[in-house]
Image (cartoon, rainbow over the protein chains, first blue to last red):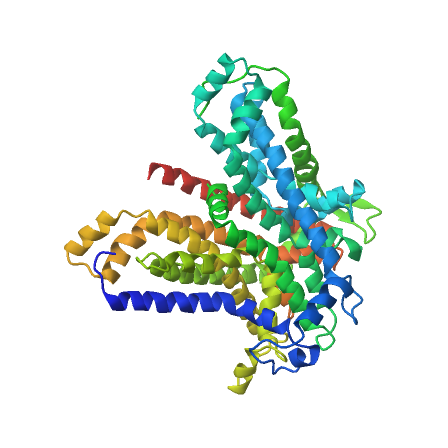
Length: 282
Length: 293
């Protein structure tokens, strides 16, 4: 900043620390709750320091499941979330890098039409067309399958637009040079374009993984068997029994487990995350 | 923008497009057109028979006081969340934009809630403010405030707004910070030489230069409140008490699933589609302006 005043920095630190406190407090409470036994949490006088039931709670949440709610243990839900989030990310990258390649590097009739057909999907999130999509998936016998969890969420244009934008910045000389070297469309894609796109792919993967992991409404609708639940839908179901019976300490342990993978992705791959976030919004 | 160098294969581009086009048609266009079609039908409760009834679903919808209530709820909810999360994020971003040694650390500490699922965020907030066991509900009661989001509609709305704002601050923070950092320092120095203090510089230089970011974020936030907050509402209140947190999107879900009224649900879907398309159109007009800017 222009003038340097020490108190200015102090105010900034104070406000930011307060901000971090607001942001972290709900999660801190969840962490604490996941270390106490049921009675302490439900009693309404939970201390703000960790308790002694950490291992017990997490063990029960992951491997055993709630005793009163007879829900699936969370370990399996974590696996379901991992499979569907990875599937959504990989699937979206796969179909969109191919279609972006076609739209940018080829000239063919209906090229613009194809682009617009894909582009329009940007406008309508799955929540708007939820029941008809449910019907389609059920007619295709994909309820309670990974395909049903993954495929409908892949139908969107963000990836295609991102790759299209990136391909436009790749110098034309590269294509001309590869053509002189005798490379066809496959060779150019594999040896030139794909290596150049690695960062874009990684950034898109990070964003889509978080998006897929955090899905709620869609998995809630199309999974009827507990064995196909994802962890985000599982937490809510732990709390649907009457409040006195809900095992909050297990629900909070589950919440912590549900937050861990995507938060770790953001913290440890911050560069890619920021890039993916900013570029998918262009 | 077009490439000047390209391949001339006849069949290959179509093959490359096939996977995305199939998925888009099966899971996007087909269901979307079904929603439009269904909104003109009346189905019995078991979905066995249906008859064409024209605009009756829309007429019934517009005659429903609950629908106007849901519209109003959506309006209140989205304006509160957008205004609060934007201003709080802007405050934090302006502080992080100062030349602080620890700024990168604070940035990391501010952005991670983006990764928390809306439904999980909802669970965290209801746990904090649960009337009987919430850690923060206790002091409220102790001060003589009859806090009960499970029974009181205004309390429920407050809680849902807080959870939604909490989750959105990180996103807005990130974009505001990027916007602030792209403002040339020379402009601020010129302002300082002319004798403008920090506050004056903020309101007359920084804030106007930031307006494209703010406007972009406003649209994104409204879309966020419309759709992504479904998980928060479902986890915190389930649309209640007495429909006081039922937004338009939540009503599409509730009427179709719990009420089994698919025709009305489809009509609501169509209304929402129109709103989203309008919002997107606004956003695109703005994006064009940004390019000139």
